[in-house]
Length: 618
Image 1 (cartoon, rainbow, N blue to C red):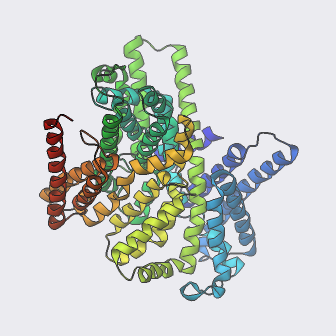
Image 2 (image 1 turned 30 degrees about the horizontal axis):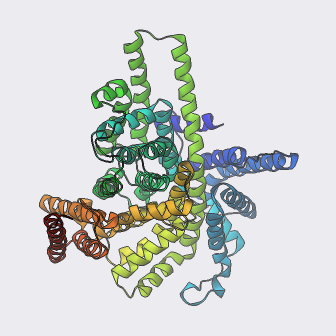
């Protein structure tokens, strides 16, 4: 079934199949729920009862899909008039989505969706600003089921058009050997650096983000290689796991292929994906630069993974010569996206290019095309399509569940009320509203996938930031960043948990160490809100100045966090450096001057104390 689903979407993107928007969403969700029931809800011990229940679930999913396919045109032509039968089918698919979400995504998202579903019925009994008129059962479930603003709304539309194609593209890269190529490429870039192994992990994770759409998936792919290598070079299991968790989390914010939520941002903001990439590139680079600095000073402080230690070295020219056919489709994807191709067309053309150059590479090396090669090629293609479809399932289910939340917000108007509530709670002070947004995003991120976090906060909280004067794209990027880094925020940090499992380390220690290493990432969103030049908004001089000052700020903050610069730094100096670095990342001439003065003072004192130590023979 997964191969059929993936092939269907590829044919749709290619233009061979012409399917209008609503049928595409319905067919996609019908297949995704069926696969989820058959694969993700599979139990270790299949009893006649569980098999029967799963069979009923698949039949129900197909029945609902077929019903709405035959009904949606009539509903549109009647001006949205629905029947009691529509309500029954609506209740059935909503219940099915809740069960699948509970079993395959998590109880938290399912519980939040349930709370929102109750609101139309309990609105009259809610206190204060949350009070609302009651909605009938027929009105509620007909709206959520038979319109394009509920289950079949923007979230599932994005999953059916953008996300599934990128999942298939990532699966093709993985099946055709991109993982090994990207690791060797990353290693070749860092082989002569201090902390080369950890820095390889950082670059590798950034690149693997093009294959995996989630932080946990990124950890699983990159961590399986990087964590054992870091432990071998002398890093403790806790620090190796923490570095990998933070690096993998950054894969979701790094262009050209960002997390699945970035494609939702396209639809919610109306900004082309190329514009979102452009705005996110400098904050993403600063994120990874901060981790580079952290592991660099940690390596020097702990005396591990230094430059003079022996290690396996890959030569960049040889790596590119061996894997050129894998590099070309990645470069092509960047070109297509930058030049304005739609994201799904860019991913589709890059996938086709990968297959073509793979065949050409084989002809060049083997001088012929053998039967075994063709057989292996077909197997890889089918396997890639199957894996891509499977990888899309959890994201699609999360999108469908989140669509219910968005539907309730749209139908009841509670979004506007919550927006006003946030503005009132922050006393119309932007900084307070930003802090509230950060806290909400992080709390939701403890139990929800990034896609769901972004959708909920973007629907409820981001409008408050926009209403208070924050530009639309800036507000959504702010929400998006905190949704992503919630995966390394204790006490529930999914990326850290997966990384700890691979490193065979204590979960809590890895979580808090990852939080420490990623501390600068919690400051970055404030940086680009108060310094829009970091989003490439402003003159060339403003952008260059902001970037250079921010790099210095990130560098100094890294020294403060690790507590090392040529030698250990005491707590007082670390605190002063942290304040100085923070002032630099807070854009403004006055704060920059004060920041540089504080930083200069600490470095002067460190140098002075070192000279005194030398003169006294200590």
